[in-house]
Length: 160
Image 1 (spheres, rainbow, N blue to C red):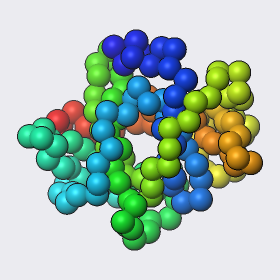
Image 2 (cartoon, helix red, strand yellow):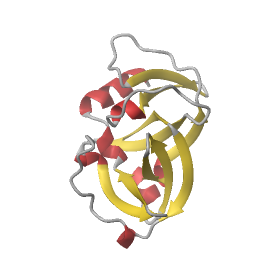
Image 3 (cartoon, rainbow, N blue to C red):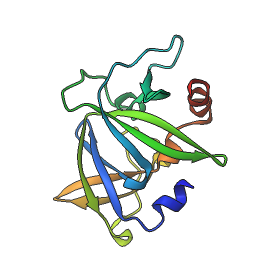
Image 4 (cartoon, rainbow, N blue to C red):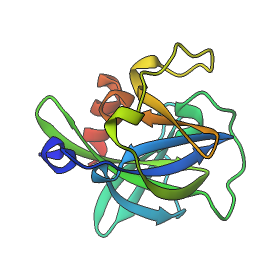
């Protein structure tokens, strides 16, 4: 289902974590929320911020900074939660990730997205679909379906 939504879409939502600019296909982003109260879940990994109530549904939220190997930092007025839809083993899941700021929607033709070089930035290479340049800045395209491990999917399913 999710793959059908994004098939042919060349529009990407860009956001920042630290000084890095990331992009995800707009078809995967279901909501952009202001930072709200996140209820902690006991005995969960540090990068799992907790859960929020999203219109009556329980939604897990991960800390984007910690998930991608950045240092933890204070939230700002631009910190927000991106809600993503992704598929795993034939099921569609929704989860939130905090980001430092949302930038803009950009259009990238597929031929402009190059394979990502091996990075020393600590990202799992499976997280990255490719890279491009916009205004002399590198844009890192994420593979949302690879960001969450099987263990994290189990965590998501227990709080949904």
